[in-house]
Length: 119
Image 1 (cartoon, rainbow, N blue to C red):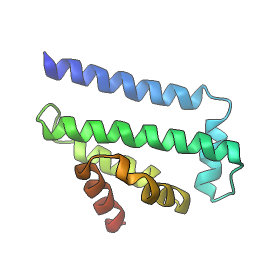
Image 2 (image 1 turned 90 degrees about the vertical axis):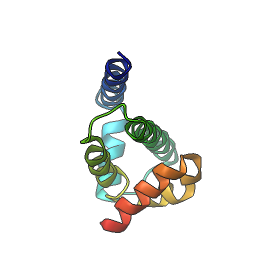
Image 3 (image 1 turned 180 degrees about the vertical axis):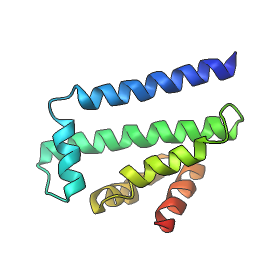
Image 4 (image 1 turned 135 degrees about the vertical axis):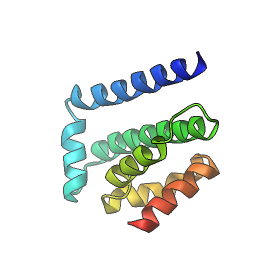
């Protein structure tokens, strides 16, 4: 029952994240600018940093759930791919990661830093 609840919660969280992005008037353009390496306005930077923190907070939680035995063996692979796509794909995200990583669990920080070192 606990595994089913966690799986359902993860699915709802992922869906909510995606809906927030594709329903937003701002985030798709901000993410596109970040991926292209374009400079962000102050407002865009605030939006991206909020998105970035939410992204990492969710992955930190998922990694904890995996380590507690609640999730399947494919979870580290999916977290790794997401980190490569968001954190490791551009200089801005790496800079934000370096400045904010103390806000996450030491296990997650080690995991992300290893993914980034492997790139």
